[in-house]
Image (cartoon, rainbow, N blue to C red; front, side, top):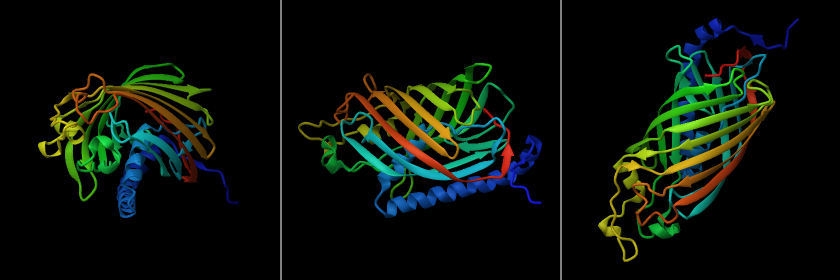
Length: 324
């Protein structure tokens, strides 16, 4: 008689499968990302593509279950975001668009809403992962401070993140981490062009209840970030050339260094195949090396968003919950 029960595979067997499965999963993700970018650009929706990158950057990790979790999950949903054109801009837009959901829980590699990461060495204190970020394109004709200037192209950031576990409770319901992301920034319209680097140390506190492995747990993440960017990246957003200068917008050249600070609170809940999330972010560029640019029109900002996703396919292979 055929059984509908899912097969539980021990970690040693999953480790054997992981090398091959990870290759195809990551290769598939690369193709999907490329197709998604082409779709958004072809249909004039570069802003939706970049806002999607922003959503994936803040969204919290999916939930683990005590009796085992699927090796992979695939789904989708929708989100509403309200974000400024760029940090320091008083112009704010609202975006509504679909979002993907993909989770892979390999022995060595993992991919979920906390990023793509790998356990390259056996350590309870440090793990390495891939972090992403980005910004929406800006139509200068719709931004008062940038009237007459070149449009800002959509920006995509990617790079390694060292995650240092500073403190955890024995039951893992609370965890304090120091995250050290270093990302390279690229424009993604009309080809890919490198435009600079950003280093953004983060202090992150995660709270989970009723337990760290409850299938219907709530997750609250509190994060403080202090970004430092090189001159090229700051210049991309805040430089004003001599040709673009006006009586009310003097010529300006950015420099590298401190970029202010921001704090974020994100709340999420997993209920069977459904995932719900929301976030709010406060951003302060007072004291930043580019704060005196004429393109900085608001030094303190609040932004936020909500999202819902549904898992429509998942692996029949179950693996133990992993916290790394």
